[in-house]
Length: 412
Image 1 (cartoon, rainbow, N blue to C red):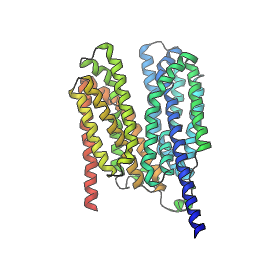
Image 2 (spheres, rainbow, N blue to C red):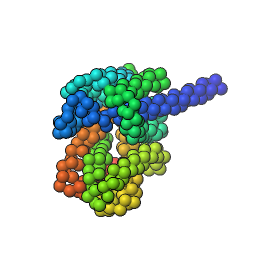
Image 3 (cartoon, rainbow, N blue to C red):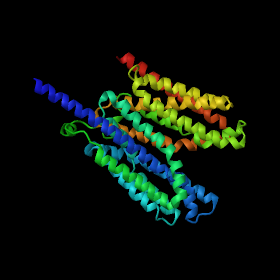
Image 4 (cartoon, helix red, strand yellow):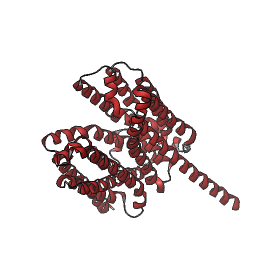
């Protein structure tokens, strides 16, 4: 009995060690990966000019096409890679994606025409899916009670990496030039690849035969039947639609409401930074919050809190209030996004989780691609209307989450 007890304790300790090591590996690799992307992409217009495209209109068109094509292609490819991950495990899919990024970023340093950049960005979208697979790695390797923590850390790295990347990229640009920055980005992705290969310990797939014999939710028609999944997809899409709507209009809106021209850039940067860090804090505290109430409750409440933050932008012009609203908005969005992914992770069987997360990420990416376009169209009529629409949309998401909770309570 003592031997069996000691063996069980040892196995539990090993499992805990693996989880903590895996969590650190995935978090750091995700941070490295998203930092590597933003080392160079914010300066893509400068690279296009360096390639000989001097027309401002042409540079703007090529920049938009090159930046937009990758998330668009990735949105359609993510479910495909997710279905493959069911058979191979998500670790191999993350490694595949990182290797493709190393190759593509290296090739980008050798292009001579803008169309070649576009072609490589298209290929990059085809082989991407790094973000959802990293989240899947974290969710699958974590004990159920720590899933929110695992997802929260990955989402935090996805927010903070892009905040740091442009700063490092501007320094690299001055040191090694734009082509050298592509090499640096490739090296960063290679470092993330090594970290996953050498440090991440994929849990034994002992149930693979059982999963192969069981029905698999391998397509949209299958996963949409899972309890609450369509609602989760709608919420992920809606949150991303709102989250990315500020970027195209905020500097123009601040000028419109009377912020002096010399302060617009600084205030815009501070608002985005505060919002990003507040969202990261929201990602982190969600695990603690979910010990007290259900994920859907926090999705509803957080969406309402974010709606309040957006409404402040629509009706106020005082800088202090806007800064406070950006903190409320960012924190609430961080809690809502982590909570909705955690809720989906707990409700979906492990053999279907990769595919389900793939479709959730497709919703995320479509929101990412559509949001700036819609914000620009609404902003062309009224900058203030963008924030009014954001607040209304978030209130609708809160109502959707609350309706789902009421239905489940009646069903129980």
